[in-house]
Amino acid sequence: MTSTTNNNIIGFIGLGIMGEGMASRLLTQKIAGTSPDNPLVIWNRTSSKCLAFQQTYNDENGYHVVIASSSKEVVEKSSLTYCMSSTPEASRQVFEADDGVLAGVSESSSIVDCATLAESDMVRMNEAVVAKGGRFLEAPVSGSKVPAVMGSLIFLCAGSQSLYNEIQNTSLIVMGKNQHFFGTTVGYGTRAKLVVNSLMGTMVAAYGEGLALAESVGLDPSTIIEVVGQGAIQSPVYALKGPKMIKKNHAPNFPLKHAHKDMALAVDMAKDAGVEFSVMNQAELLFRTAREDEELNVADSDFSAVFEKIHKESTSEFSKNR
Image (cartoon, rainbow, N blue to C red; front, side, top):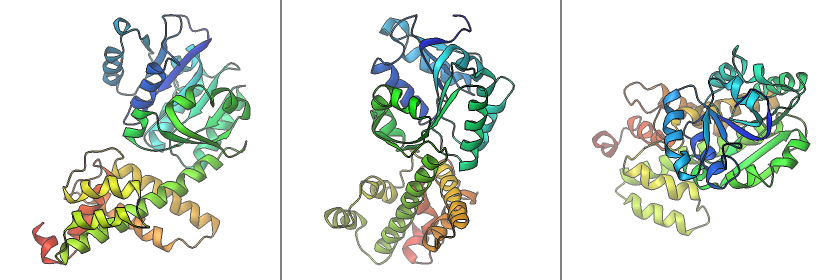
């Protein structure tokens, strides 16, 4: 392949917990990687993930995956590039490095960033891409590892209207079950994502406290989960996370450190907006202390592991002996 942009080529940067599933959907649903002339071009900071991905979806199985040497090369070889970084720090490094995303942007480039970042991060990237003649769409997603694999994410978009229109019924529709466009002002997609994730984190924190209370007063938590699932407060989040909590199964679908990052960003957004946010402030504090607790060591565990912090801070005999 040459460094000339091919209008039929899609690139994907970031093959972590979310990105791997999203990129696989582009392949299996035949949006990208359908032939040697139409490969999926990938890059990840940890190169072993690219190699493993390429081996899984190799030419023998009818897929065509090319590993780029840098994120700059992905953008140069692709007309449409998706980016999915885990943190604002990682995103900034990948975007602004000498061989980063921005270095590869030209007038034929379209960048879709799906990470959950601060609004200022998205605004900065948009301005930089547009200044070089490219198009930018922020598209943070609601959903975690399993929805990414299943193609049932929810995209919360803002930025280039023309880019959104082009991908809404092609690549977005195979990676997500719904897409929402919040307008051409970059930042509104991020605002929506922070509202959703701060609410989700607060729900899990409250549910954890409720289950811990049930256990500590002698109730069967499995029965309480069943009761909650039958009433007005039932929730897919409760149905998924409740059993994980009581079984101490915190294999990461959405790491606690990432959940806390989103909640902290939402707290800052609420302060700037002058909104009363005391309930979610307390949930953010609980997640922060869980993340920082070196003894528990749950930062990389699923955010359901906030349940372990709840029990650690409790004085009930059940919690002490758990």
